[in-house]
Length: 79
Image 1 (cartoon, rainbow, N blue to C red):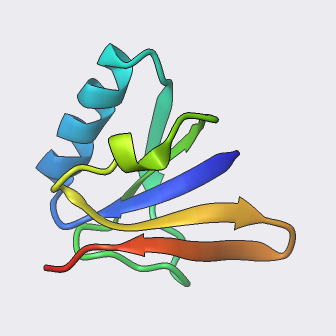
Image 2: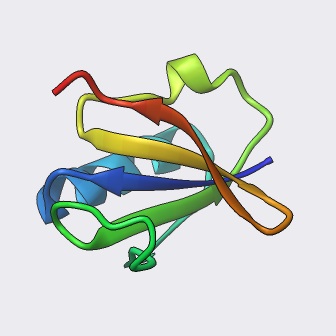
């Protein structure tokens, strides 16, 4: 599965990329598509089949799963 995460801050996106690297998951940071928006404007795309609950961090604002025709919101932070 492919995902896009959005973040509250740019530093949170960079921190998340390092976290995912330690887990062996490649992450590409990029501008967030305007239709998804985010507070900091930086998103992270990655592909994995792991349990997503273990990949959610306090830095993530929203998490989308890429699907045909767009993205589906699958997680939003409580903050």
